Image (cartoon, rainbow, N blue to C red; front, side, top):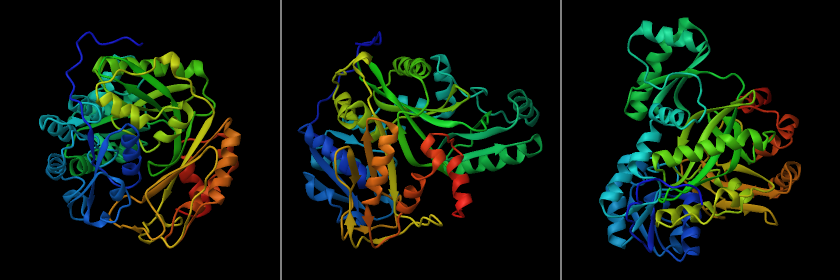
Length: 463
């Protein structure tokens, strides 16, 4: 097994019931993993999700508040009360909502429950982009050029830093995420205006005005490395993904492995990520996000949670990442070493959103009919069914279509065929967009970067 931390692992509380502090397709996914491990589940809902199908298959189902997420899925007190009332010994946050909230993780632990994710200190360290960058540099993970400190208040000092990095630069919120709190600055004359606007946006969105500055890469790809760690100091990386198909920093299509990157190039980066996890005592699953340009990797952030695109790594690695995450939270040692990780074939994931494919406005309503593809190497993660009412209150993601095949070309063919067999009536979806994208020649050749999709959409007149 991989090396372990010098300190003894903390005592761990066993649990037999998991409260799923989330909704939609990820609630279904977590519930399935729990049941396959012999664990009971508690599903929670807002008033808008009272008819959620996963409520009928959970061992307990509680409404915790109004449709407004701030009063339900983001209500820490309501979630902890639900856990206490149902006897749940652990809470799985899924992704989004409170999944990367260090205060919530701490409150869960202080309540004597297990938070299925890293501990609060790891979330705090990696959730702050400045401290995360500092930790990664100390572990030898390559980072985007720029200081590992917050942007100073002195305008002259800021100007010197930007000149040392070289324009264009990007200003980012230290506590940011989800594509918010960042601005690209092409020239010195726009620097201070960009800082002022981003600082105020950061204050309002993340509660902190702290900013940092980095080199803005012109044509990078977005590459991710998935890691899995236990409390005994063991850690492995599970291959890599390309998530460059983005619109306004929101991913649309993901694939594993990232095309055109040789094992000898990505290997040392994966091992550096593992070393970083050991140094900070990380537990559970996490994802290192990089920009990749001209053969070089640059760390941008770490997601301290399960990611939407985890299925493509599951398909290529053969590992159930959600079950592994739960086992790590139970205090179990990893069941594999790095030598045991063998990623095979190629996988794509399309995010299916309830939104107009021309203007991207959310589409709420009742699904009148539903046809989902089946077959070898085809997987659908969703919570919807014919008659399901899509709510206007939450994220527009209603499902994920995933395929796996021996080669990238075969996986693309399989995805085209699966998309052609998918029908969702009664609401607008982005199905026509992703179908067209899988017919695009440049995407088919793997010759894209993080700006490609937006440029492609502009050419189609969809922006």
